[in-house]
Length: 341
Image 1 (tube, rainbow, N blue to C red):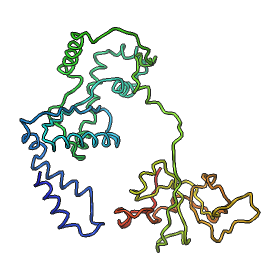
Image 2 (image 1 turned 30 degrees about the vertical axis):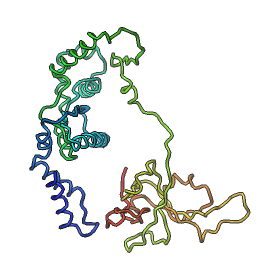
Image 3 (image 1 turned 45 degrees about the vertical axis):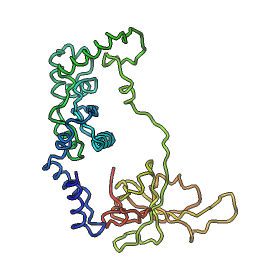
Image 4 (image 1 turned 60 degrees about the horizontal axis):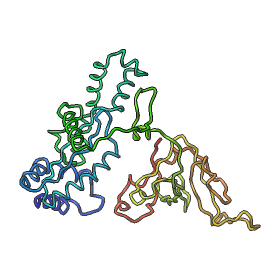
């Protein structure tokens, strides 16, 4: 593994003298290429072929749906454990897998075929429907393999376990048989959710797929607007008033999003204004804030509106990062306003 670190170190030293030169995606691609060409994963297994095993089976994804950011997050955690155990000297073979059956697969096929109920499946033919499901589960296999390689998630993709494969199913029956031999099986009753449309019981995971409105902690943050030559605002000491439900992402912030067709206002909001007092607010020392017009109700004190504009007029405006991090040394187009839904 020493060769890996030397390669990375040489690249850093020879090519990166300023923070803005750190192109992390490019660094990742160089390291990935090195690992692939040198077969580092395969060598990590070969070097420990006679070592004590650390058994890992990948919790299998279903390839009839595209990979999402939540898959990358969970895989990062799993990969940490496998790499750590490998560093400890264990043989970690990391068998990949594919989840190829279940209600989500059936629902996806029903949607494509316009099927609305279980009797319609039976009329179409269960064998034919199963064939459609088997075809569906591989729809995004290429995308899964690409994201697996791109994120350096080391698993054996050449010999995966596949849950609809007869060998896999027989192995499960064998396990149940062994449990039964030890008299660990019992017959009991349990109340489970039932879907009349699907004609089947539902797991707790499937029931939890519904949505409901919940209260979520959030914060309001001021971002100071830069007085850049290209700014259309030309107002000293102005701030974007931003709302977020993920304050832990603020140190890594590099952009603010506005709705191009949403109405925004620039206001003067008095500091520490108490409407119960006779003293009037001093708007000359007040904060200048830009926020969505529909969100003026979050301003608790006195204010007056100076300007109104569409979100598209704010696109391209620059602002100061609120934390001094490596990100804050990046040059434009970072720390600018972008249009988004």
